[in-house]
Amino acid sequence: MRHACPFPRGSLRARHLPSVPHMSEIKTIGVLTSGGDCAGLNAVIRAVTYHAIQFYGWKVLGILDGTAGLIDRPVRYRELTIPTFDSGLLRESGTFLGTTSRGNPLRHEMPDGTFRDLSPEFAEGVRQLGLDALIVIGGDGSMRIVSKLCEAANIAMVGVPKTIDNDVQGTQWSVGFATALTVVTEALDRLQPTAASHHRVMMLEVMGRDTGHIALNGGIAGGADIILVPELPYTVAGVARRIRDLLSQGRTHALVVVAEGVKTEDGEKASAPDANGHCRYGGVGHYLMDKLAPHTGAEIRVTILGHVQRGGTPSPRDRLLASAFGVHAVELVAQGRVSRMVAWRENGVIDVPLSEVTIGPRALDLNDPLIRTARGLGIHLGEQRAKNRD
Image 1 (cartoon, rainbow, N blue to C red):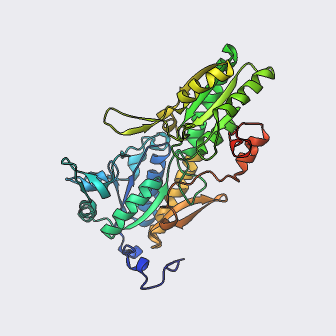
Image 2: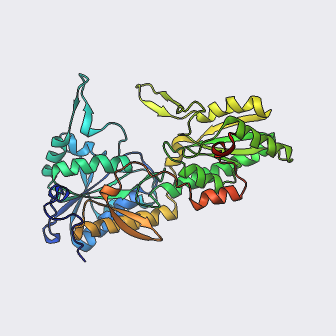
């Protein structure tokens, strides 16, 4: 059933919505992956291709390396067919189309240090390929950037959320999150025996630049004693006290999970420039180790999972989610319901306006049932500072 436009006719927003071809006019759609990679991306591309070809007879073009494939000359793409996926791509992590998480084509830095908007190049790439709609698989940053590019190119867009951080607005689950949780949980399963054997505190630094979804979910599943997330304040003294309490109770070890985006006590994010001068998050685990060691008397070791969380065979949940999202995204295009993103809520696939998605990352809800679960298990979340100045 075709839904009415959510904006009144003649409104500013309605005038700037991309033109939507009627289903009978659609001949070719594009699909691309943008931002950081994760498990399940190939499963989304597979679902989009299968449904678009088998049910609508559309041509499907996979854009290589995200938006760069449409901006570069010659345009870089490959036609996707049913046999494309006979090699088992459903089971492979990453994205066989390639992706990029660096730079902003809306403000591309030129060799002379000036900045340029590459929207015209993007629009010309769309025109050269004859695309009638574009399905974009990305996180919150990609949704924001690519939706503006599509609006400037006057092409219909449907988004599919993916990110190991699970911080895309409007959806409870994003593609890639479930597999990342498996990696974190398995890492804790491996760290616990060695921590117990050597009477050590093992600290696991996980991804989560702005939010603590991975740390909270993975920490609970992996039996962590302390979980630190960007959304909840902490003090070194409070964490040290919890470690001392555990050891005084007869425990020989402890497990700590910390999100990479957790700040130092001075309010700074732990980061360092890479060889190209780009800021990279990470290092809060070693910061905490140095701060905690004098106050606990414990031997502390730090493990930084890093990009290990992005890889691995996609979990069954990620494959199911990816398949459901890909089919629904094609249906949205067929129904002319574009400028929307597919989402998972209350055990089902829905869709939401992109305007509700492109407002920044989805932080942990402080009333999240899992926060109550962690507290009920006696896990130290570091939030006590707000009450008693740990």
